[in-house]
Length: 501
Ligand code: ADP
Ligand code: GLC
Image 1 (cartoon, rainbow, N blue to C red):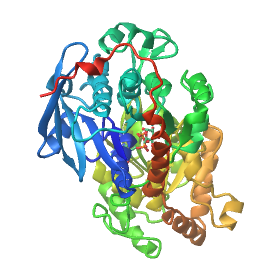
Image 2 (cartoon, rainbow, N blue to C red):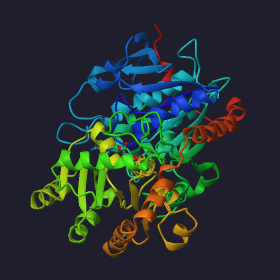
Image 3 (spheres, rainbow, N blue to C red):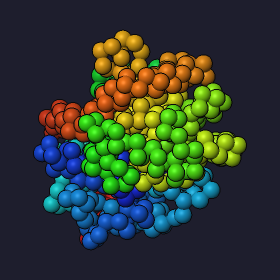
């Protein structure tokens, strides 16, 4: 089975959040499951420069006339196609925004080619390998199913498409005028297509045209079908619920494993839990915090955005400090949140420490050294940091929402009694509920033996990528017979404009 993974980022080459972790781990798990997997990525600098030995394979032309090179190479044993278009990708800032954090105005041009080339690769652009399944991730790749759909009728063996929503809050919305540059047939710009309240929505294209839809946790798959979390697309998601499933992300244990992690001060596991204490001391020292082994040390590793509910952490800080707790924050994002955490650290230098920035190594040390990982997100499609917290024994304190609800079991008495407790979960998204969960964490810490029992239960959690991959493979399989039927109408054929060398 030949499957093309299409995404804007991939760890370790380029990562702005969990999407990169997922697209970095899934290909290997799919390959272990016997899938012939290849990747398609935009030629953003870190990607193009990070893959050695890329060679030109051919060229294709964007509907608005830009000629783009397709490079081909190998990454971790997988074939990888990279779109080489310096005019689109050689820019300061990160993958999506400029140096001032403002989204590039031509992001539709920067990411539409991912979809366009994905369709071409399903149609024989590479004479040696044809995608039978195109698996697109998030809005950046979401036009792939639309291009596939509108070119299908003309092909003997059309590919099936899977679209995974990692975060419905980022939809890839563009003014209506950009539609003409996408090269999709006019019929696609309507309610049953890519049009969303008069704009072009990449996300909607994926949700409307893909044969199968997935989200990154079962609970989020349900939540997005309601108005609160559906981002205006809940109606469409309800309509398509028969093809929508939630597949929980995994943890890549080659990177996230406290027993083998070279980035942390001292390795440990459930049987050698005492060794973990050295990581706490190292973290307190690193940040200049008071070296108090008994202080409840809480950690945040996060994009600092509204999604993550961090105002609850700020509002709850006086109580955390009054109870003798400490806080470490590693993150960046919205200036107001950055400033608020900085101010807290200045006011309490021995109890609060903040690193504003992105630091992969430090993130490992925070999970290994803290007692609690705070993830009070307003919404959370899956969330990886609470899973990293679990497998590193930093008990997650989370809002019962999305993937957080699917991965953390509250330290309520009945869960403590049967050994299933792994963290602290609050229901209502407000300061009182957050505060009560925090007090549960302090209360449990006061009972040392019980805390360690919960910690061991957390450390033993397994979030296997192989299990997730097996579910994706089942989805791909379900599409293979259908992929050989030619049923859908078509008009314009942008991918026909491919130019082969
Ligand atoms: P999201 O994708 O919504 O940001 P996830 O929890 O799925 O949330 O994934 C976030 C990923 O980014 C995790 O791997 C986390 O460790 C990492 N991360 C977030 N902020 C930082 C940071 N400032 N430094 C290092 N890693 C970070
Ligand atoms: C998104 C979500 C996050 C999820 C990640 C990987 O960034 O916000 O919850 O874990 O994608 O799927």
